[in-house]
Amino acid sequence: MLRIGELAQKAGVSKRTIDYYTTLGLIEAQRSSSNYRYYSEETVQRLKLIHYLKQEHLPLEEIKERLAIMDQYADDQTEKVFEKLQHIQEEMKRIETELLQLKPTIEKLDNKQVLSLRKLLETQNLALAQLLILVLFG
Image (tube, rainbow, N blue to C red):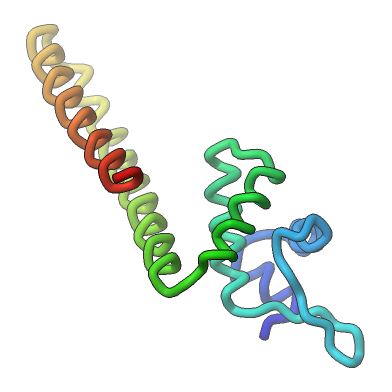
């Protein structure tokens, strides 16, 4: 069990954010006999998920609804899916960094090379989007 300061540090958020999310019902705390709030280790992952969903521009009310659905059907498989999604997000950030490093080289290409590269990327993006739709929505 984690106290609010420990949770804030592990999740990379402020104590105030934890207070706010607790008030909204996004996360839950257990009270000790001395009225301290304690949070489970799973709350760290929940906060990271909330952060990810906020980055996707979901309002907190919708995040709360999604978390309620997730809680209703939560099992080991759900946790594994979110871990994989977190890994995919990290991988996408790594790829974005690599692409930004390529930008100066791409800017030196002639129009024909840029067009060829654009077509290749469009094809790969389409294939990736189709795969995501297939995996997520079957």
